[in-house]
Image 1 (cartoon, helix red, strand yellow):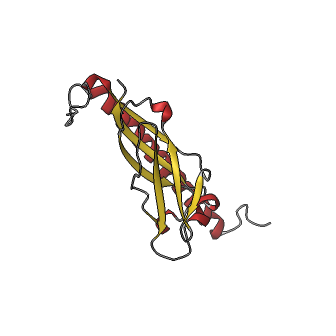
Image 2 (image 1 turned 90 degrees about the vertical axis):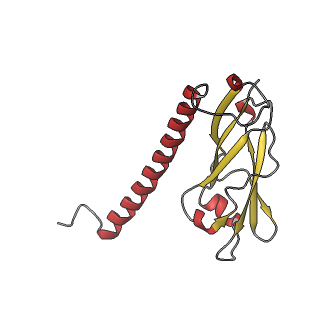
Image 3 (image 1 turned 135 degrees about the vertical axis):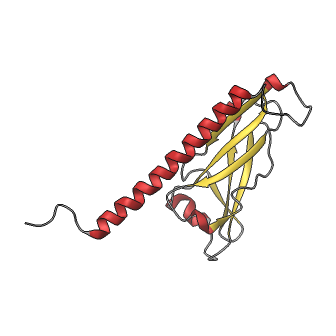
Length: 156
């Protein structure tokens, strides 16, 4: 009788998928824990350097765009996405950090950590092909790319 497993390539493929899954879970857990930590200690340990609002009005909001959806072509094969943050409830433009996630080849894109046209309800991110000159737009749907964000701002 043959083996229950198709061979080494099956094991390697399963291992790589498992590693990718664990990375996603660890990143989301880290973002959640940091968000909860910052919210919990905001009046004790977080120092607000601007004077735009009352420290009690600070909120941390995290979210993501829908995987593979919402991307638009830009220039020669590049892409951009407008990310909606309306549900965060910010009254002023927050401080935003971003990261690109998906099922592979994110290393081909540059610009994912750059925020353009931020408002209290949305921001835009452009992706450019920094390595292979094949364009990033084709990968946004193929590899289900999406943007995750963490925003810190005022809600009152």
